[in-house]
Image (cartoon, rainbow, N blue to C red; front, side):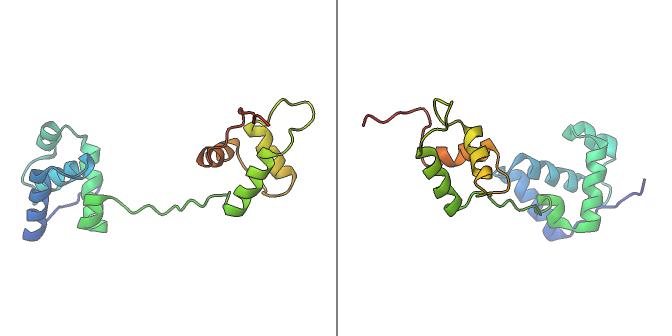
Length: 152
């Protein structure tokens, strides 16, 4: 296993101390700050750091590697997430879904179910595929209940 040496600048050391002493950051950031500060120029051995901070030696090695290869900010805050989620049901599809949920129930059913609505949206070719969970989120957002019956 390749050994990585953590060498902090004076500014980085001060920022890590400020993060640790202020205590208004998430636990992972404070833990990473503690590890980096204790690994600085080999002040302590890995065994001592694992015992003091109650972290695994592998976590220390991983953080040191990230610090050397990707920099101070990435080691402290973690990587920015790359994956983007785009909703399948946009405003237009939402309108179709609500209209469908308010329409007559298919023959043989007492009321619309989430799975039945999802299947019908695909059958009508509004969407290529949609889960019943996505249908539930849209209906919950609009306060539309499939179980209520209107008194008309």
